Length: 225
Length: 225
DNA sequence: TAGTTATTCTATAGAACTATGGAATAATGG
DNA sequence: CCATTATTCCATAGTTCTATAGAATAACTA
Image (cartoon, rainbow over all chains, first blue to last red):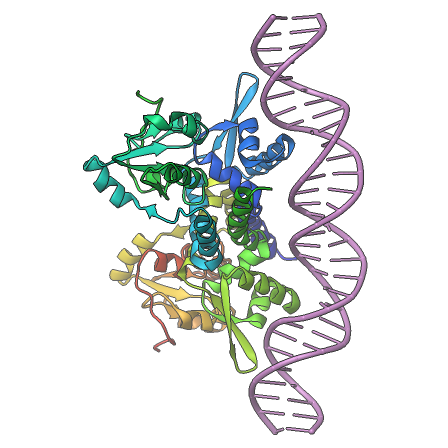
């Protein structure tokens, strides 16, 4: 094998490191979750319904490929994406899948149809209606994800507190719920439950990583209320 | 397993189809070659030093992932990238590898150092010097890649004809050679050989896909001479 | 210091992927 | 219609990857 081939093999092997890292659905799910902000192995395992061991192992793969980095915080370790490029990689792969595979649309539409929650808002319409004050925007992700970054003006309203706190919500305005992004089920379920209780509720398909990618402003920190 | 998980698994599985397609160095090499233009299995096998069977099999993977499409031309089949997004995917992964892995740079520099061909031109400098007419630009890829798209004004000068046609080249101008892109060895070897014969020769790191991605004009068809 | 918690490491079995060579297929040319 | 050319299909053996459960580690806490 000549030096040319050794060189080419070495180069393509480097590129393939990234490919292998994103070749497994569970690791893609972890990247998706990490786009929402830094977090622990335990939280990732819980949110992705994986065992802690398996989650840790997948995170090692991602770390070996330099897609995530880790730093200790007390006894725990905080995992985070290496930089914005990692989140863009995930978004770009997701976009390509939407572009190439009709299945992506079909799967989502079937899921939404089952929950009578097909109505989905886009960001432009939302901004317009936010200005008119006839909507209230709920961030239905867990609080720590809200704290790591949220739509300015959105109220933290985690899905698992929705039933208890429903009395807080106005019945004369449209309730818009968002979560992690177009394939996250939290906002879909929130809209479904709210509709069943007589609210005007829709979900917003995009999430913080999408807005960040578009250069829109993102608020950080706790719920101001 | 609830319907949420079924849904999530289905979505991430779709995205992972792309990941798996780009998880193997040989398939990345095929994508790189296909960025130069449509071609046959046999040509891809030759250029990548793979067996035809193995090449065909990898192309099936890429086709299953919708990254390439195929159409018959006589007895042969012409493979091509599905669309520009596929080439951008490859370029984006290559860019991330450059971004994340110092090895990429180290590997390339070591290879170039061995051939005393470290000097590399960028596109801006090239355009400037092209205007001043003190350079001649050679496209050292195989003719069919030149025909599929080349820098306007570049002369088709395939590497394997270089020694025979060297007399055609001017000794009072700088000879700039380009090929498929930053990790293609053709231009490196061309510059090396030309220097050994006393020419002022440098390589241009970028290639047609890079210029196309930047929106620069690309000429098509045969060599006008 | 001992116990607790969070995480990684290790071993293993099973699944998925890859390379190879030869047979099968399909279109073309004489 | 046969031979040729180009490619895919198939079976196989070898390799790599994944999930799992339990042991090991390392940092806090009482």
